Image (cartoon, rainbow, N blue to C red):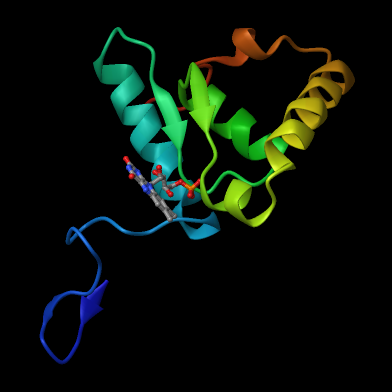
Length: 107
Ligand SMILES: Cc1cc2nc3c(=O)[nH]c(=O)nc-3n(C[C@H](O)[C@H](O)[C@H](O)COP(=O)(O)O)c2cc1C
């Protein structure tokens, strides 16, 4: 974000300081790019507020995820997301780790 009066970055570190749902698409894409570039476990972070957000990160290549803003708003949410993830996997008949890095996109 840009401060239009000073024409300087409006956020903390310049390109940082954004959190919450608006960050989800950026975080998922970054996770995909990093996961393709390294042979290390990658943590997905940014905008997670529900189980399918976690699934997006895993499909993009994340081995683990972190929840910031949503957990500050609702401290019990991470526990609920774990339960919802189990239900989602059961319903879809998938094992979460099998989805890791399974994005069907040639970019
Ligand atoms: C109030 C607040 C404090 C944060 N403090 C740190 C920090 O000390 N170190 C760090 O690496 N990230 C920090 N972050 C960034 C979060 O770890 C996370 O990358 C970011 O909030 C995006 O995830 P979210 O959308 O789930 O919040 C902070 C975020 C918030 C909202």
